[in-house]
Amino acid sequence: MPTPVNLPDPWARSKVGVVVPTYNEADNLPELARRVLGLELPELRLVVVDDNSPDGTGKVAEEIAAEHNTAARERVAVVHRTAKEGLGRAYVAGMTRALDGGAEFVVQMDADLSHPPGYVPQLLGTMLSTGAGVVIGSRYVPGGSLSEAWRPHRRLLSAWANTYVKTVLAMPIRDVTAGFKIWRREALEAMDLPSIQSSGYSFQVEMHYRAFTRGQKMVEIPIHFEDRREGDSKMDLAVQLESALRPFRMRAAERRARREAE
Image (cartoon, rainbow, N blue to C red; front, side, top):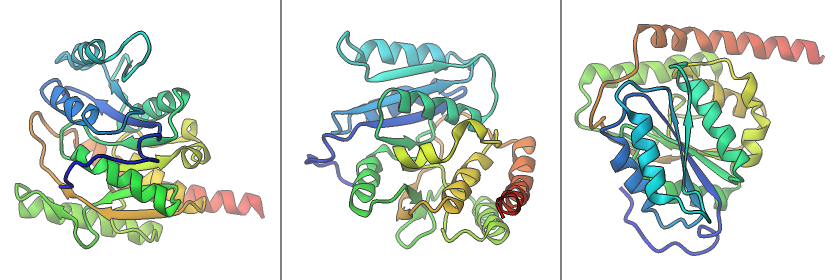
């Protein structure tokens, strides 16, 4: 993991929104917030999007916000949704809130501490230096790695999913299912967030595909992917089925759009 450093301009001036969807993450959220808010990015704001978690995650988020917010500045925003509608819808709500709050760059990451917050400055720096529309924290470029806690069948499933999606959609990136990345404001505005169809983990693929087909510059940097600290994975059978079918639907929709444009 990168070593924390004092960050110069333009890092210090960059308005960064970190969007974290939550569902039953009460045990992980305080530590995640501590690490994110401890980054030496003065203009960073954390946006927590909670899907009415029965374990009280929303209440924990409000407590964190009360601790860090002042009358002059909001460091933590909490978006409460009334039902569990899926990762994709949560991200759309959080990204919209971050953009409405003036974010120039929007980070998306999981709440389960599998995405080490210490990489955020590196993601931002890569974006600033390359002019990319999206910078992806990748497990599958040289230097990237997975937690040793991942068993062989899980590694195989992840590798197969990436190969499957890349074959269907022909995208030139290594980690097409990655969920840890930073977006430039203009790139997100080009994504047409309200029209996103994916509700589950296929949201990651749909966003990558939209960026690719809209000509956004996409850059990958290596990260180490940690294993979940507490709680259970949200990858159930319905989510897996949507993730398997969504690439074909995206490809078909893109072909229809091209035909209509001709």
